[in-house]
Length: 333
Image (cartoon, rainbow, N blue to C red; front, side, top):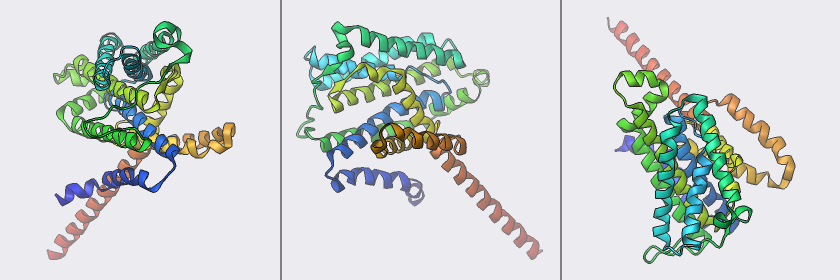
């Protein structure tokens, strides 16, 4: 029990900071930005699942994020569907779309898969941008319903919405922890390391890749639905390639194939960009080189680099203990 708690000290510390953060600031904009970062992190978890653990780089992720957001917006604004039913339907619509795309996309491999999904993402953007009668086109959707009450709990303020999003983020982290530490997660890693070898040991790689892809789109849709209610306005830019590469940057900086990489990468970059807002267009002169340095010195991301350092430290410690035991036995002889 003590060992398990010791291993989770850092995550529990950051969870405590997240819970206490709104209590130590009156700035609603800061609360809004951090809450938005949590939503992006949920989407990046989906990208991390298919890209980091399964080894399939999907560049349509922002498109599925937008499908979740627009599904919720259209169902509540135009359809008059009760909020939480619309929320559930948005997840189902995104998952079905992900399944249909995955059945075709996963017949390709490596860079062909990346190019195919990039095209799919851009098609989703064009549909949203051009289908003015349905999506509002460049005007977007305005006046989307905020989070509906759950029993006695209401989410009318930025702080209450922040805590609801945090709950969804914690549930996502727990789901990812359970998944990646299970036999299914190890199957995904086996496919990432060598798909041919995974097939030789009896793994149905097509089926497992499809499940991973669908789960990633589900998380993207979940993040999109949360985003729509959190901001209450959405436009076609959320499906554009720029959003896709922002998510990919969050994943790379945090660390692909790590459990907490999406949270660390997203929070770090969002907070850094917000801190440099006063520099306006010149902020990229600082942000760009910093990003390049992180990628050069931490190719596995910040969390990945920390885990490598931790593993090396543990190895040296065990080696030192082994050498001490060896010298003790020699002295005894």
